[in-house]
Image (cartoon, rainbow, N blue to C red; front, side, top):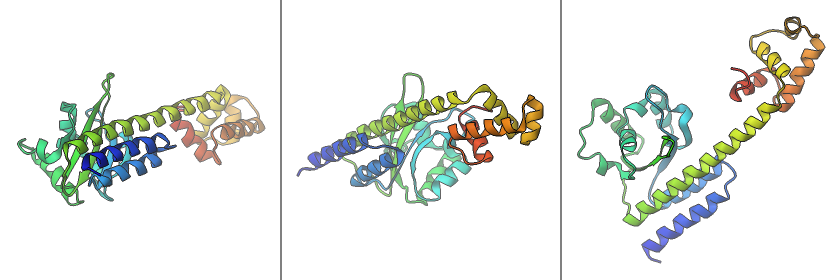
Length: 246
C-alpha cells in the first residue's frame, strides 16, 4: 500500500469511526488513533478566548502531556502563545517550526515554546478554525518531530475540521438538553433553590415565601428529581450550571 493510500485510509477511518462516537471521549480516542498514525504524540481542541478571558472554559478536548495543560492554564499562556497568535491571524494550517522560524518572538512567547519542549512538544501542527460568526478555534498537535507529507497535512486538516464539528454538535445537543431540563423547573422551585443557595433552612424559606416547611421540602424534592441531584449542594450546583439561578 502506498503512503498516499495509507493516509487516505487513516483519514476515512477516522471520519467513519468518529461519526459513530457518542461522546467527547470516543472522539478523543478516534483523534488519538489518527494522530498517532501520523507521528503526533498529543493534541488538543479549543476555542480561542477574547482578550482578557481565560482559556479554561474554551477547551473542548485535551490530550496534552500531563502537567502541561495545568501549567498552560495556570500561567494563562494563551494570550502570549505564538501558536495561538498565528492561528488568529491566518486560516492556513501550519507546522510550528516552519511558521515561527523567521518570526521574532517576545520573551514571553519564547518562554511558552521553551517550556512546551519540557513536555516533549518540540514541534507541532496546528489547524485554525474560523466561523462566519467570528468564533475562533484551534486543533493542535504536538510531537518531538513533525515529518508530515503534503497528503498527511491535508488529511490532518480535514480530520481537525471534522473532529471540531463533532464536538460542537455534542455541545449543541447538551445545550439543548440542558435548556429542556431547565425549562421544567417551575418559578416556585427556582425561588426555593435560590434561597437554598443563600444558605436558608427549609423553615426560613417557608417564612420568606409564605409557605409551609413541608411544601418547601416538596419543592426541593421535585427540583432535585428534575435535575438528577442527590443532595442540596448538587441541586444548587446544577442550577447554577444550567443558568436557573445566578
